[in-house]
Image (cartoon, rainbow, N blue to C red; front, side, top):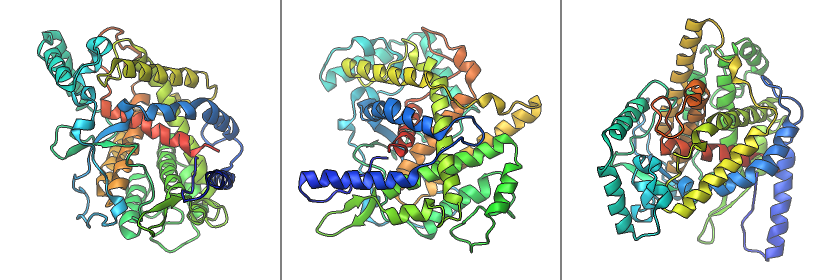
Length: 449
């Protein structure tokens, strides 16, 4: 994790402060040994991520294609009356004016596969708009049929997330670099209600079994009993819990690393909050639960890494362009993405998802659908987050994980992708692509020590 306590000091002193807080925080994160439910060791993951993946994924998520995310932050909570949005100024998300969004991104998914994306020279925005209009208006009947198939496929039963309608007037582009994930001051019953709904109602457990250290319930010393019950679950349901726990841990690390420390002197000061970090992850303060949470974070990293490994053939096709309208930018972005895929392919300890849903065919199908619906329900709960900035990053990371699960359960469809024409069997929207890579980018940043 990269940490920096930003304050007005001499540049040399600031560097020392960054290094000290960086090393101290990371020393608290250190784990060793093999993870549960896979044969991967923590040390190998750290070396691979820190030296092979993070430098590249950081550059990738700063490029235009991945920095602009279209999201609807005004969707009502579907499960309980809206208790009001966070009034803290740092909860606010600044949408990106459409004039600032690259014209190729605004043009939608149709042009993602256009050969013009590779040949289009630098033009004025008006000329680009005219050219894009011409591309759309001259689509062959075959292409139009393919696009219709994609739209129907997007509504099919392979989604693990409730996707925002990008055509809604409430959907806006957000520049993720200008709206970083950080602790805004949003906390208390409203925030915990979201997580408790996720854990207590969607994690394949009876209501009589309580998650350890439930913040809204008195401590009952049930950690051991809970994990005895959890280990008795089938692999699929155990994996589900570990993914949610890992996502929760990842978000907590981000918030502890970029914590609102001071609002004085006319501006906010952000930096690492060690006390908050210890409260969530220290072995003594969490009765041993902190270690489990961090291991679940590693497990989540491996799941998303495996999804990128599986989806590589989709992007390696020449027909797929990460299209913004700037041919040089687009070529460099795709080349960087392919470099990341090459590094991932060389990693020797991938999670083996083939052990999941491998039982009786009908039982496996039913369990997979239950798995999908539970996660889709969690994605809907993200619309109940009161802080707009927290909602933005919660929706993005949930959608990123949901896209990873979609990839893992679409192996046959990905293997059958045509090289030079659109696929009817497997498709990713730009929204899913941006969420998948940015979500994994957050996981990669967690482990920078």
